[in-house]
Length: 463
Image (cartoon, rainbow, N blue to C red; front, top):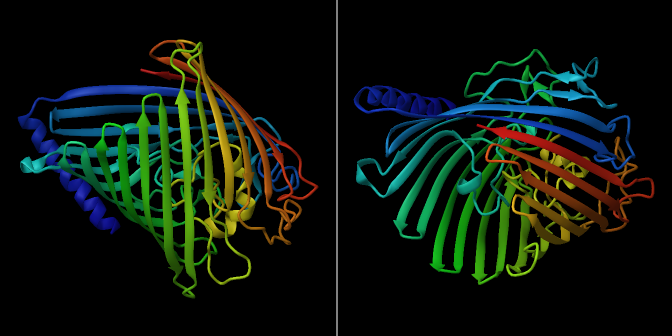
């Protein structure tokens, strides 16, 4: 399949080069620089395994440059390069070569972040094609990213890309269906990169390339978008995912059937999603059965000072039962990224590494109430205040390993999370962000755990 993917991509690149002779070319270049500092206090192990997971204080500088080459209204080529070096100022160091090589500075790779071809209605057919490495963010996002969001969770927010072939069928006004094939290897196998000599064999780098996923992943999905009325949208979907070549986890596949619904009435909106999962582990035929979803309601008081928006919701992600051979735990598929908060994605690593590898964001075994209040004190300033309480659907049974002191194996109360996020837009090119999250663990965790804090500030400049 890798060879087929490359052949298709190279064929279309040849067509584009030939077409450039016949059509006028319009270039839309751009660049972005993002500087972040993050401070983690007791974030991964809640203070119970400081040797394995020391606190972190680090800077990360993401640089992107891109160009959108328009051959005509129906044909364009988009390419983007990216890198994100990091400097660890705190007690944590990047441990490579079996822990023998400790680095303060991670020089990172220079990678081809996006490279795709857009073809609109070829031969006047009611279909748009996007072929190549692409993001499913912004206007291209599926729902709110509940199951399809980040194809490369292993490198954080450096990249989000999917190696994908996408066909969007245009049925009628307000009605479309996407058919997508994706291939996400553990390290980049499709396009060249400039990478350092780092190698730790499993976590950050594998054979000198950044680790991008927990396993070699492939998927196919069919996703519908249907505007039933002016205020009602339905999005049914089917997703197939196969995970293989983990470090020490059995190969598995998952079928997911789901529906997302959004209802808007004046200043009130209600949105929800339900996903049912069925699959199996190929080595022993053990079945996979998962359920996940959410329901959120929001109201915006447009005539009030600060234009407040209040949002209240409930989240449910099934957990794996300890007394069955089935795996009932919900699988987040292609969305191992921050959802309702940032801090919890790291505390999930100790309980999910055996299912999804050493990558954060394996959202599973969670029930929660999420409340958010968004305020706009100034035209270009927004502040979001949030309180979130979480439970586990099932108790853990972790009694060995570096994180054995983290869990009580008895309670189900995960705890309380408080968050504040501020965004300010200085002008059309420069914006800033400040984010603070504080987590108080409940009896799902042991008495040895400590409260955790996640802090981030960011400046971003776009040309």
